[in-house]
Image (cartoon, rainbow, N blue to C red; front, side, top):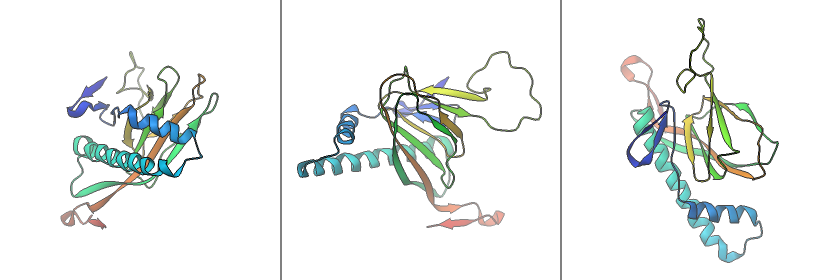
Length: 196
């Protein structure tokens, strides 16, 4: 079950959201990635698209903070990013993103029939009654189908993986981590930490 908010943002379980980006720029990225021998005339477009993409990703990161985390006195920023190429029968191991606050994945090329990401609720449960009907809020894991243009943001400590890829399309995703600048904690509670 997803909650709709302003700007078409879907909040899933109050922990992640997906927002489709324009496919025009994604199509250029696919062509750019597929063709490694760029001519000098392409450089302007590469810079234009990547700068635009970084600004758009940062805008969504700031919106995530405003709507979901609502952290005071800090401003998130992107610390690093990388491309993933996943072919048939390949997978991404179960993991988290340490030294990051919010992580994101932009699906440059993905097919919702074959491509998904799986999240895990790894909280220890000392009492575990049987569940009548599994849903997004009570499941121990939840997979989410993705399509080209989807941007998924989630807390970096959220355990996730990509199951063995089915289908013959090459899934291309751009993943990134973030941190914050500003003041964490509270001086009165003796927990203040300023990060510049």
